[in-house]
Amino acid sequence: MRCNIKFKQFLENFAQAEGLSDIFRTNATRYFNAYACRLSELAVVHERPLIVGINGAQGSGKSTLSDYLSQMMASVLDIDCHVVSIDDFYLTRMERQNLARSIHPLLATRGVPGTHDCDRLRDALAAFIDPKCTTVELPVFDKLADDRTNLVRKIQMSAKPTVILLEGWCVGIPAQGQLALSVPVSNFEFTHDNGGTWRAYVNDQLKGPYAEIFDRIDRLSMLRSPSFESVFAWRLEQESRLVARRQMGGGHASVTGMSASQVAEFIESFRRLTYHAIEVLPELSADVWELQADRCIVYERLQS
Image 1 (tube, one colour):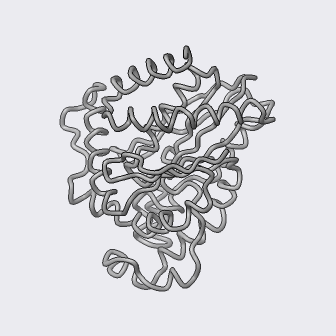
Image 2: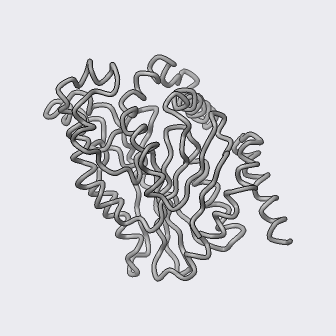
Image 3: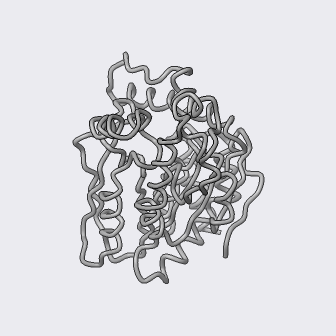
């Protein structure tokens, strides 16, 4: 009973601070709190920090879920929990421009596999599970500036049971077969990648460095979107929140972020792998939450 009261109090404080809707409160009460308890149980018996992958399409709520879990597990369950966002490992703008010149112009746009610093991410995950490592340093990416900052986030490790949440839209996604790559999936691909160079490069990255990173995941969990169409509304909402936070945090009031049309164009490069994830990732995941367009969970499969 006392633990339930602590859950309720923490949830209410978190939801108010983040400006979250009653849908998140319902999802957390019905699903996420029990999930956190299960991860805590696993962390206690795990010989090293437990690495958990959190997959979800853009705007599905994976970052909010990860932040909630990390703070709640530390506050209520006495478990160290650290969030690692794959987005913070995007290549710099200059590095992506170099890829665009040498391989394909679409690689100037951050997002798809091939636009992350896999070496740095792999080293960070290795440091988390190294018993001799006391501090792990993570990069910080500024999405509004579309570039990596000079900031470094330092995480202090302890001897307590620890959970590492690796969250990102492409986390855990396997490579596609050659047949799937042979045909453009949208007008966007037909126009910008009719020859298939871009999608072949992205797929090769999934086969190689990304597969090596995802192999380090001990447990994969998925927020499964109802369709790609929901992603546009979610990503537009996310962009508005990014701008609002920047302005409230002392940023310039002139910061506007992407327009609706720019968001629509930006997410097109995510379409192929978002559909691929919706189709194949549930079978590869230990835990799946089926979302409605309003992010309300309508079905849960939680591995014991």
